[in-house]
Amino acid sequence: MTLFDTHCHLFDDKFSEDLASVVERARAAGVRRMVVPGVDVDTSRRAIELADRYPEVYAAVGIHPESLADWDAAVLAEIEALTAHPKVVAIGEIGLDYYWDVAPRLVQQEVFVRQLELARNVGLPVIIHNRDATEDTVRLIETRANGVTGVMHCFTGSIETARRCIRRGFFISYGGPVTFKNAENVRKAAREIPDEWLVVETDAPYLSPHPYRGQRNEPARVAQVVEVLAETRGQTLEELARLTYDNAHRLFPRVEAGGSR
Ligand code: NI
Image 1 (spheres, rainbow, N blue to C red):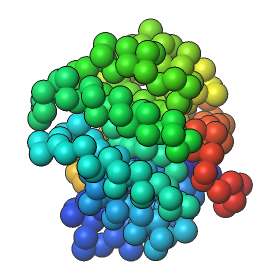
Image 2: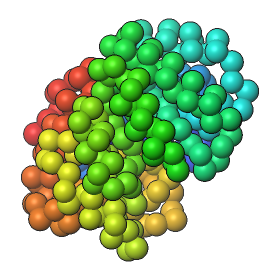
Image 3: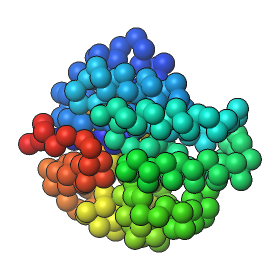
Image 4: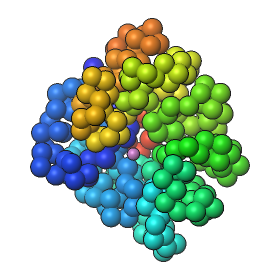
């Protein structure tokens, strides 16, 4: 089986002691590609360092809505400069977070829109974070993305929301929450996502799938996500692994196609 973890934060301090074994376990589980999204300038740089160190790791660069406490427009120029690196494959993660509300909502929206514009200027897809902000997130995708495509990271929304995103060229990414016992509503939507728009992720070190819920997550566990999705959708493991792997390459065209089956 060949797997693609489209979202893992390998720069996190929780991996500082044993990152080499985490990557080894990912390889052993069949994970051939990983995208590491930054959340600010510093972690975007660290994501690129990891991409330089590990052949199967790629980086995304961007400012997360939780990183806007001391927002300064100058950082966007730094993010733009980082996109020159050949293993930077997306702008992310970016979006809106009305749960933590670290910055005023209008500021979050402005930074989100400016990064959508940056993505268009540099020709990269975007990785979208949305927490308790579905209406504004989808509205800005519909009105301000202007042809930029990307992925709805760790999707837990309805099939109606998914369809609005797909219509704009956005892939739907499932992670640990789709495996949780009480997440029947998440699986209900997952069942109806068309094959060609589905991708998977871990969001490691967060959101560990069942039966590891609450533990530190790692890319090897994208296998559990694929297993539950396959069962939910009535597909074989191999089928689901193959289609999400191929879709992730369509989502991130800069990721090299090698290392496949
Ligand atoms: Ni994330």
